[in-house]
Length: 391
Image (cartoon, rainbow, N blue to C red; front, side):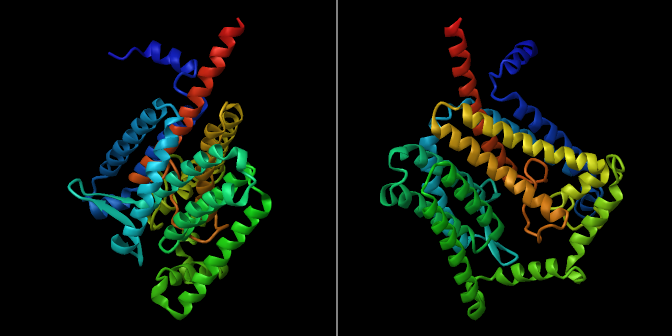
């Protein structure tokens, strides 16, 4: 039997890592279960003959497995992730190439690979995003003495960034942008020369611009360009018929009021195309009101704040870079999703981390948070040992 008193003691003593992060994760998980159950009614009637509990149980199982991954990742001392990041980056880049050439094509984008036998599909960009951030954390910590040097410090960092982001870009512009921005932030925190960082940013913009220009003459070069253009045009033209998703989202938000319609009472879930994934934040505001929407924002900001605290307290730079990089990427993605929902940004297709219904993307997010918890666990151990020595 589980010894709950022992678990509670360890939790209070931060032996499982930062307890605030655990509390936020559990709170978001409960909210996710309730909102997915509420928002999948129409989907259940179309796909499961009206079995409204099917997606609730499925999502609950995926979320439970994600929490198990998170727990397992936090038990591994974070220093081991330095070597693991090497393996992951060496695997992810060939997988990205393979996905572009032979991956499952959906909406003119090859993002998915299917694992034989178990028939599990996943986006290789999720793995690559995690791998690059971890690898950059490793390289920045390894090259602290030569970090200002162009050849010895900057070049070894720029190559994996351009390779990974460049391979993600053709199929998933928004993920490539988030990863590129996260990389820039990490380079800035890692004290890379500012002129090199500005040069990298300009190089990235120039390469993206050149690719878009080439696609105008050769449409098959970047098949997704037309989709990106239509999204930008719809966003800039508020009267466009292509704004159906954004319009339904705004209706959900405006009718939610201060305290919402309460769980299970959403109306716009029947009209929004993806109320359980891309636009789940709209359903949250409709059912829980502006207070619920504001609470979600506070939850993500709390995760970022705790990660910054962990990074500052980390005795080694690798742990600090890991915590900041992984959590910034997660929170940045969350704010991109919420920005789309409230019509501040064009549609991107980014899920809301820890809240949207999903499978492997949820697991990679759980793995990332588990790594941050691993860093916090080691920090807590060192601080406890120092306090015992002083006594």
